[in-house]
Amino acid sequence: MTSRKLFAALAALAMIALGAQAGVVDATNSSATCADCPATLTSAPGGYESVPTVDVWTLDAVGDPVEVASTDIWLEHADVVFCAGGFVADSSTYAPDPGHTSFSGIPRGGVALGADCAGIQFNVIAVGVVIDVLDLNNNSFDLDGSGAVDISDLGVFATAYQGTEFCADYDETGAVDISDLGMFASIFNLSNCP
Image 1 (cartoon, rainbow, N blue to C red):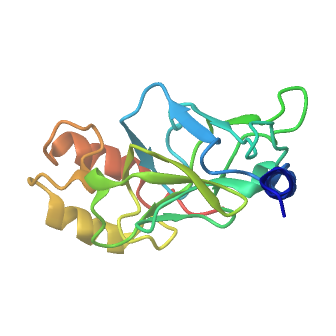
Image 2 (tube, helix red, strand yellow):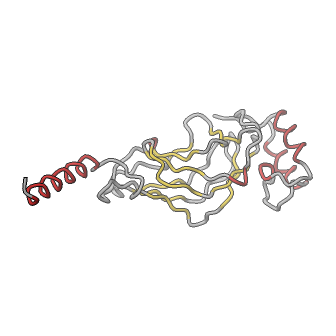
């Protein structure tokens, strides 16, 4: 086989490989951005505050937009326990803005008992592919990840009181104090997963 024929065969194989990747989310070309990150998200099973807006772009290997349903794009971290359904994108990446969506809603959930809330970096996942990592630290009123703010969480909060435990520092002053206790009391027994 001549070098010209070999080159042509290799080029054809490369084109076939790229064609197979068209329309499939590519982790290298896809991305997520957050203008206000790093930021802290305070969550509760019944909801508390909106996440800073996160923009997501889903692109394939050749840079073309990939259309994905909103439920196939989500935020995830091992120490964050979202309510049923997780925390998914606001909308699909279909027209009129192909390949683009955002997260701007109110996440409902808590943190796993013993979580390092100050060290949380969320994976942005599209159809099972991690496309980016965001610095969105998470503190929560549901301190044991049970799906409710109840007596168990009060015990965890009491242990953290007058310390520096980030998970219970809702006003983000660097100390768990009377202000945080007031915020915790305002949501105690009122916040459960829907």
